[in-house]
Amino acid sequence: MFSQIESGPLALDAALACDLSELTADELVRLNRLAQDLVRKATALGLAAMAEASRAEAHKNAGELSMTALVAKEAGVSRREAAQQVRLAQQLDAAPVLRESLGRAGMSTDKARIVSDALQDLPADLTAEERRAVECDLTAAAPDLPLEQLRRKARRAVEVVDVHRADTIENRQVEQAERRQATQVSFWMSRPDAETGMVKGGFEVDAVTGDVLRSLMDSATSPRKQDGAPDRPHAQGEAFVQLVRHLPKDGFGNHGGIPATLVVTVDEATLRGSTDRAGVTEHGTTVSAGQLRRLACDAGILPAVMGSGSKALDLGREERYHSVPQRRALALRDLGCAFPGCDRPPGWCESHHLVPWSRGGPTTVDDGVLLCSRHHHEVHDRGWELRLHPIDRIVEFRRRPAEPWRRNHHYRPLTLTG
Image 1 (cartoon, helix red, strand yellow):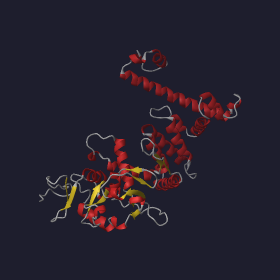
Image 2 (cartoon, rainbow, N blue to C red):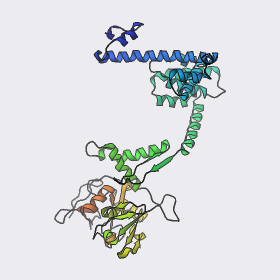
Image 3 (cartoon, rainbow, N blue to C red):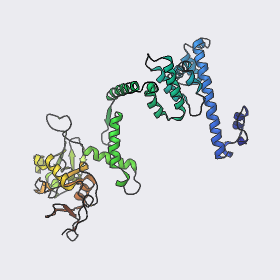
Image 4 (tube, helix red, strand yellow):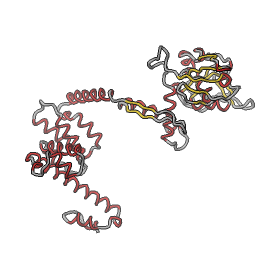
């Protein structure tokens, strides 16, 4: 059995001869360690031979134009990968401490490449003693550090001899990376699928923007906001929808002086709730009557209201929307989504008219309420009745006239209401 062979020349032969399915978990771990040790030692030998062959221009004896071509052919890799191997071999030839460490557990060619590249990029005015100190420091740390942590340490390679200079170099590298990332951002989105109506898209953004988006998504999909174990991709999809719908509509480039706005054509009777007829956006997407009525509460949606004979009756009167000062007043009063039990903050909420604007409701603070998208849907779709309590000015909800009025106690202690 493999367990009886600890090491030595017979270890590999014994491992190759045994039935792996008969090995215990402990034996498989030991076998994996043996294989990795052999790979590291063989790699170190190969890189050393590659460096010597490059100096001797041995590729000419093999009839190849370059050492890269020879390695690509013999190793069966791309010329790009072969060039990387040859470059690493040549760099290791000038870094004896790093070269001798390749056989250590935890080392790899990826880590060796990170360290050797850092050594190549050291300031030219460092002394030989300082360069050796940097090489020893990075080499000692490499086996135990994950790749990303080793990359961060390599960016501050001179820290072991000059902390201030490490700060300066790292900041300069980050600035260069940020400028490069700014030129590489991209975004794409498809037209709606003919069968499902879904739109696909993708983007590439800089790391900081990615962190901002990740924080927003994590905040919106944190475990305390979910019932049970959520389907995370779906939960994040819902959060992304709400993020897009709550972007400030006036914070982007205007088209002819008009803030970024989605125009939706809607039948007057549909907007007033007396009939259900689908509408259509300016991009050609069909929208249900219920969705239209919900969207009509959003200042980023401009309803083109049509009467009989497709005559335009109204193109979104401005007073339909609560102003910025009014929204601030609503935030101070409601503190977040006013629906019972909800904990969404004001920034994730939409303003809703207690008496619908389409039915003559005024655009005032007293006729307004903050609702998150989910509860905005709930109020519109299930016919909730809303009122502003006449004494303490808190919005209350009920489904049917016989039911008691309910309010959100998340932001305020429980109180009895009439």
